[in-house]
Amino acid sequence: MSDFLKDSLFFGMFISVLAYVLALFIKKKLKLAIFNPLLIAIILVIIVLLVGKIDYSTYEGSAKYLSYLLTPSTVALAIPLYEQINLLKKNFVAIMVSIIAGVLTSLTSVYLLSLAFGLTHEQYVTLLPKSITTAIGMQVSEQMGGYQTITVAVIIITGILGNMIGTTIFKIFHIKSDIAKGLALGTSAHAIGTAKAMELGDIEGAMSSLSIAISGILTVVLASFYAMLI
Image (tube, rainbow, N blue to C red; front, top):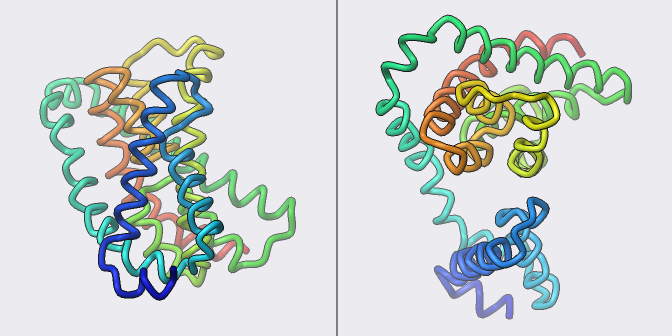
Protein backbone atom coordinates (compact mmCIF):
# COMPACT_ATOMS: atom_id res chain seq x y z
CA MET A 1 0.00 0.00 0.00
CA SER A 2 2.79 2.43 0.91
CA ASP A 3 4.54 1.76 -2.41
CA PHE A 4 1.30 2.57 -4.25
CA LEU A 5 0.84 5.81 -2.34
CA LYS A 6 4.41 6.93 -3.04
CA ASP A 7 3.49 7.00 -6.71
CA SER A 8 0.15 8.77 -6.09
CA LEU A 9 -0.01 12.56 -6.06
CA PHE A 10 -3.46 12.97 -4.57
CA PHE A 11 -4.46 9.84 -2.66
CA GLY A 12 -3.66 11.43 0.70
CA MET A 13 -5.68 14.51 -0.22
CA PHE A 14 -8.54 12.30 -1.40
CA ILE A 15 -8.84 10.35 1.86
CA SER A 16 -8.55 13.61 3.84
CA VAL A 17 -11.41 15.26 1.97
CA LEU A 18 -13.48 12.07 2.06
CA ALA A 19 -12.95 11.75 5.81
CA TYR A 20 -14.11 15.33 6.34
CA VAL A 21 -17.21 14.81 4.19
CA LEU A 22 -18.09 11.71 6.22
CA ALA A 23 -17.46 13.67 9.43
CA LEU A 24 -19.84 16.42 8.30
CA PHE A 25 -22.47 13.76 7.60
CA ILE A 26 -21.99 12.26 11.09
CA LYS A 27 -22.26 15.70 12.74
CA LYS A 28 -25.41 16.51 10.77
CA LYS A 29 -27.07 13.25 11.79
CA LEU A 30 -26.06 13.15 15.47
CA LYS A 31 -26.06 16.93 16.11
CA LEU A 32 -23.79 16.74 19.15
CA ALA A 33 -20.91 19.17 19.82
CA ILE A 34 -18.53 16.32 20.63
CA PHE A 35 -18.79 15.11 17.04
CA ASN A 36 -16.73 17.98 15.68
CA PRO A 37 -16.15 17.40 11.93
CA LEU A 38 -12.42 18.13 12.10
CA LEU A 39 -11.92 15.86 15.10
CA ILE A 40 -13.85 13.01 13.48
CA ALA A 41 -11.97 13.49 10.19
CA ILE A 42 -8.62 13.26 12.01
CA ILE A 43 -9.69 10.05 13.72
CA LEU A 44 -10.87 8.54 10.42
CA VAL A 45 -7.61 9.37 8.68
CA ILE A 46 -5.60 7.87 11.56
CA ILE A 47 -7.66 4.67 11.32
CA VAL A 48 -6.99 4.46 7.57
CA LEU A 49 -3.24 4.93 8.10
CA LEU A 50 -3.12 2.31 10.86
CA VAL A 51 -5.22 -0.29 9.03
CA GLY A 52 -3.38 0.26 5.75
CA LYS A 53 0.02 0.37 7.54
CA ILE A 54 0.79 3.64 5.78
CA ASP A 55 3.66 5.79 7.03
CA TYR A 56 2.76 9.36 7.88
CA SER A 57 5.51 10.70 5.61
CA THR A 58 3.96 8.76 2.72
CA TYR A 59 0.50 10.12 3.49
CA GLU A 60 1.79 13.67 3.95
CA GLY A 61 3.54 13.57 0.59
CA SER A 62 0.23 13.20 -1.23
CA ALA A 63 -1.87 15.32 1.13
CA LYS A 64 0.40 18.37 1.44
CA TYR A 65 -1.44 20.16 -1.36
CA LEU A 66 -4.30 20.85 1.04
CA SER A 67 -1.88 22.87 3.17
CA TYR A 68 -1.39 25.29 0.28
CA LEU A 69 -4.99 26.43 0.78
CA LEU A 70 -4.40 27.36 4.43
CA THR A 71 -3.01 30.85 3.86
CA PRO A 72 -5.52 32.04 1.22
CA SER A 73 -8.42 30.67 3.26
CA THR A 74 -7.18 32.63 6.28
CA VAL A 75 -6.89 35.81 4.19
CA ALA A 76 -10.43 35.27 2.87
CA LEU A 77 -11.72 35.70 6.42
CA ALA A 78 -11.27 39.45 5.86
CA ILE A 79 -14.43 39.48 3.73
CA PRO A 80 -16.98 39.23 6.61
CA LEU A 81 -14.92 41.82 8.52
CA TYR A 82 -15.19 44.25 5.61
CA GLU A 83 -18.95 43.79 5.62
CA GLN A 84 -19.06 44.83 9.31
CA ILE A 85 -16.50 47.65 9.08
CA ASN A 86 -18.88 50.27 10.56
CA LEU A 87 -19.41 48.09 13.63
CA LEU A 88 -15.65 47.82 14.03
CA LYS A 89 -15.18 51.59 13.88
CA LYS A 90 -17.93 52.15 16.43
CA ASN A 91 -16.48 49.72 18.98
CA PHE A 92 -12.79 49.97 18.05
CA VAL A 93 -11.32 50.63 21.53
CA ALA A 94 -13.36 47.93 23.28
CA ILE A 95 -12.51 45.41 20.57
CA MET A 96 -8.77 46.11 20.71
CA VAL A 97 -8.68 45.91 24.51
CA SER A 98 -10.58 42.61 24.40
CA ILE A 99 -8.19 41.02 21.90
CA ILE A 100 -5.11 42.20 23.82
CA ALA A 101 -6.59 40.78 27.04
CA GLY A 102 -7.25 37.47 25.30
CA VAL A 103 -3.70 37.19 23.94
CA LEU A 104 -2.13 38.05 27.31
CA THR A 105 -4.37 35.52 29.05
CA SER A 106 -3.36 32.80 26.58
CA LEU A 107 0.38 33.44 26.88
CA THR A 108 0.32 33.90 30.64
CA SER A 109 -1.68 30.72 31.22
CA VAL A 110 0.84 28.72 29.17
CA TYR A 111 3.68 30.27 31.18
CA LEU A 112 2.11 29.49 34.56
CA LEU A 113 1.14 25.94 33.61
CA SER A 114 4.63 25.30 32.20
CA LEU A 115 6.12 26.40 35.53
CA ALA A 116 3.67 24.19 37.42
CA PHE A 117 4.48 21.11 35.34
CA GLY A 118 8.21 21.81 35.04
CA LEU A 119 8.35 21.93 31.26
CA THR A 120 11.61 22.54 29.43
CA HIS A 121 12.16 25.67 27.35
CA GLU A 122 11.56 23.75 24.12
CA GLN A 123 8.29 22.30 25.41
CA TYR A 124 7.21 25.68 26.74
CA VAL A 125 7.74 27.63 23.52
CA THR A 126 6.05 24.83 21.59
CA LEU A 127 2.82 25.61 23.45
CA LEU A 128 2.99 29.42 23.34
CA PRO A 129 1.34 29.83 19.90
CA LYS A 130 -1.54 27.46 20.73
CA SER A 131 -4.30 30.01 20.12
CA ILE A 132 -3.25 31.45 16.76
CA THR A 133 -3.79 30.10 13.29
CA THR A 134 -1.52 27.27 12.13
CA ALA A 135 0.12 29.28 9.35
CA ILE A 136 1.52 31.76 11.89
CA GLY A 137 1.93 29.41 14.84
CA MET A 138 4.25 27.03 12.98
CA GLN A 139 6.67 29.85 12.18
CA VAL A 140 6.58 31.26 15.71
CA SER A 141 7.34 27.85 17.21
CA GLU A 142 10.18 27.16 14.79
CA GLN A 143 11.85 30.52 15.37
CA MET A 144 11.78 30.09 19.16
CA GLY A 145 13.17 26.56 19.03
CA GLY A 146 9.96 24.65 19.67
CA TYR A 147 8.72 21.39 18.18
CA GLN A 148 6.81 22.49 15.09
CA THR A 149 4.86 19.27 14.61
CA ILE A 150 3.60 19.29 18.20
CA THR A 151 2.68 22.96 17.85
CA VAL A 152 0.42 22.10 14.92
CA ALA A 153 -1.27 19.36 16.96
CA VAL A 154 -1.74 21.70 19.95
CA ILE A 155 -3.20 24.44 17.73
CA ILE A 156 -5.67 22.01 16.19
CA ILE A 157 -6.71 20.61 19.58
CA THR A 158 -7.17 24.14 20.95
CA GLY A 159 -9.34 25.09 17.99
CA ILE A 160 -11.47 21.96 18.23
CA LEU A 161 -12.05 22.44 21.96
CA GLY A 162 -13.00 26.07 21.42
CA ASN A 163 -15.37 25.08 18.65
CA MET A 164 -16.96 22.37 20.81
CA ILE A 165 -17.38 24.18 24.14
CA GLY A 166 -17.60 27.83 23.05
CA THR A 167 -21.39 28.10 23.03
CA THR A 168 -21.60 26.23 26.34
CA ILE A 169 -19.22 28.74 27.94
CA PHE A 170 -21.37 31.60 26.62
CA LYS A 171 -24.44 30.07 28.24
CA ILE A 172 -22.71 29.42 31.58
CA PHE A 173 -21.42 32.99 31.87
CA HIS A 174 -24.50 34.57 30.24
CA ILE A 175 -22.51 36.15 27.41
CA LYS A 176 -25.09 37.53 24.98
CA SER A 177 -23.12 40.15 23.02
CA ASP A 178 -22.51 39.07 19.42
CA ILE A 179 -19.27 41.05 19.37
CA ALA A 180 -18.00 39.41 22.57
CA LYS A 181 -18.80 35.91 21.29
CA GLY A 182 -16.90 36.50 18.05
CA LEU A 183 -13.88 38.01 19.78
CA ALA A 184 -13.73 35.16 22.30
CA LEU A 185 -13.86 32.44 19.64
CA GLY A 186 -11.35 34.09 17.32
CA THR A 187 -8.83 35.01 20.02
CA SER A 188 -8.90 31.64 21.78
CA ALA A 189 -9.66 29.16 19.00
CA HIS A 190 -8.39 30.82 15.79
CA ALA A 191 -9.82 29.62 12.43
CA ILE A 192 -11.66 26.60 13.82
CA GLY A 193 -13.34 28.81 16.38
CA THR A 194 -14.16 31.27 13.61
CA ALA A 195 -16.01 28.51 11.77
CA LYS A 196 -18.28 28.20 14.81
CA ALA A 197 -18.58 32.00 15.04
CA MET A 198 -19.78 32.14 11.44
CA GLU A 199 -22.43 29.56 12.30
CA LEU A 200 -23.65 31.86 15.08
CA GLY A 201 -24.01 34.93 12.86
CA ASP A 202 -22.42 37.53 10.59
CA ILE A 203 -21.28 39.80 13.43
CA GLU A 204 -19.70 36.93 15.36
CA GLY A 205 -17.93 35.76 12.21
CA ALA A 206 -16.59 39.23 11.40
CA MET A 207 -15.28 39.86 14.92
CA SER A 208 -13.70 36.42 15.06
CA SER A 209 -11.97 37.02 11.72
CA LEU A 210 -10.54 40.27 13.05
CA SER A 211 -9.34 38.51 16.20
CA ILE A 212 -7.38 35.95 14.20
CA ALA A 213 -5.32 38.60 12.43
CA ILE A 214 -4.66 40.88 15.40
CA SER A 215 -4.08 38.12 17.96
CA GLY A 216 -1.65 36.49 15.52
CA ILE A 217 0.37 39.69 15.20
CA LEU A 218 0.33 40.33 18.96
CA THR A 219 1.39 36.76 19.71
CA VAL A 220 4.33 37.04 17.31
CA VAL A 221 5.47 40.19 19.12
CA LEU A 222 4.80 39.10 22.70
CA ALA A 223 5.87 35.45 22.37
CA SER A 224 9.51 36.51 22.02
CA PHE A 225 9.31 38.20 25.42
CA TYR A 226 7.47 35.30 27.06
CA ALA A 227 9.97 32.83 25.57
CA MET A 228 12.74 34.39 27.72
CA LEU A 229 10.85 33.68 30.95
CA ILE A 230 11.66 29.96 30.96
